[in-house]
Image (tube, rainbow, N blue to C red; front, side, top):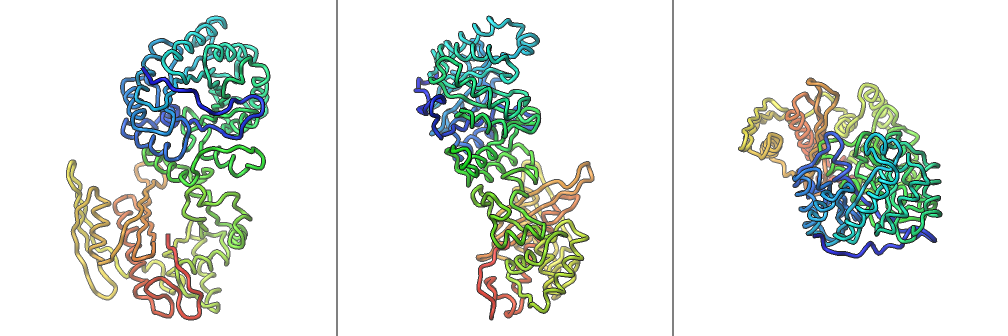
Length: 544
């Protein structure tokens, strides 16, 4: 059976609580249960490595009794990870407990997580048990689990709708039977911060033996209060928080790991609590999960959404440029974002436009700026977002629709199941040159980008490709964003089309054209390395 290991060496939750919060991540179990979020064994292994690198304390890898595939995945994660405790979920049934213990055999540190519903509605309609039967079943299960694994957690499912007196009785009994983590889940996202804080305070005062256990909170987000309720429980003495990346989970999801961790860090003055999470990996972990399960992160998602550190309103942009603490309570780099992003749109002002012109390494005399700004405002009324290529065109006086100097005359892509993709394209340059090129790749986008790099003759390294849907339905457009590096500079291109391969091709063409325009720029505006010349202050230009 599972190797015998000691319980966590963190102090219990009663008395004078320590300031260390254990992060129990259930992305691979509770998160995966959400429709459309299921993962294969290989995907779970990849995400387990991400979670280990992130610094979570416990990874709940799955529910082994649910299926052979789930049991195999838990076994694989247990054998592949070190430096983190691996947990398996089990009902309070002999067969579940044995299967969970078997799946955890390869873990360096293992935990069996038992759960049993305790609320009246669950006792009556799901379990068809009386209080005494629930109590007896819970105790027997903890004793059996402790015979196979020293670290046992017990969850009272639907605890927040359970009579507090019965909850106290159950927790006292399972602690006496050997459970060392007591989880108080708000299974249906029903409670409020004040209610959950009062319950945790009462449990710490009234549960006999509570000093032997760590109190844990597990909140769902049905009323949008999952994170707020979790924080209230931590303030009231919980020292383990159960959560998921991006807040994925049953129904409306779970409390989001990234939001909890950054709330504790940003408001350390209030909470006085810390975690072992490497916050600079949060954005990367979020995007890895999104790519794995194919579920996009909402742009306005706290902490890791694309708009979390983006500003469009002119007043906000001016404040951020003066001192970003005026409108940002966290630093973008602290969660893994490359930098704060000023979105140029109809609400943007002069300061933001000047800043973007400087970032792009462009030269715009003060006497010309008002004309450029007026043109920018006109464009912003027609476009949702003014892109870097648009700014370049405004400053240079080139009509935005002109594009170039390279244009795409023809594109043909062939994809073969089980084989390489082939892309053939024809480019025309404004100076009369033409280029035709064919390239193969692991997929159509890879083949297209390879052909474009060859045809243009650019020395270009592709750093990132992002694709997303714009709108819904069969006729929806796909947007492609490509980020590449030429010499020491980074360039970004963006395009949209109902054909996502064409969108990727045009985004790549925008990158190629921006490099070409920089090469053709007169020395007085911009030199080859992207540094402002003459009487302008020298500065490196990031085009990401």
